Length: 401
Image (cartoon, rainbow, N blue to C red; front, side, top):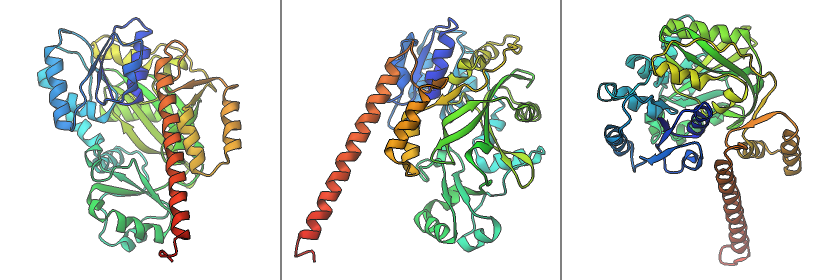
């Protein structure tokens, strides 16, 4: 069973179904593209108007289903929080593997996460977890650029962004003014200088003894939001230093299950610094199997309580992950001309690539995402024309003058 929330659900469903596992997809949001995958044997929509209603509905569905002994995997922070909070009710009927509840709580709260990781001896960017009332005081503590992040997904309504970056004192003043009501729900970190390619991500599984199993490492090259977000273009590249950091981190945390971990190289210290660990199956997990590493399969077996060892497979070096529609958006965001964007996307067709939604053996999710993208582009174009028309009419109206 896959608690699907975002593209990670689709990746997990495809990866397991290709191994012969029968899948029930529980959709935590109505628009989830896993709904359209031919690999899901059963699809149940448990989305609701708010988190409390959704969790109540999900728990009710799981209690009613006749799936005793089934493994549950989750692809979002809200799914992890739900499973962790309902361990006692669900553990008698289902098999799932999660880190300890207090560790999940710490990893889902970035303030506690930073303190925990630093206490274990890993380097982290300079961070202020409780923002001062005066923006000038923060400028005295951290160097620009400064990135702001919500403490946890629970602050989504308060600060509905993955992050926000300011580059100078004027931008910091503007941020404080715009988000004065949310300052208690965000933290600030120094941005480690350097290109996007300084950022590395690993997708991996830890067994019941917190030993690292297969671990895919990939290097970022383009992200959304630009420079500070999730990958739109990255490449599978081996990095022994990152693998060793992931191995040590899991052991010191006593971590069990799937994790997506990000590190970033810092030229100033000549070391990799910890950015984040997501205690769930990551959005780009379908790329793992495309690169030859069965990370989701490992997580499934660990959830079932089986003894698991590394597959011994070598990852396919140079294979590119490419999320086409969001890659177009991120290139537009940095004002790359449209002809050049088209050239970049055309060139990607000649690379060895694996996409987020597109798959030759599961076409419909990709088509749905493409149609949504074209619809959004069309609507954005209509709105732009309407604004220009309104501005022109206002300029021509003598009364407005």
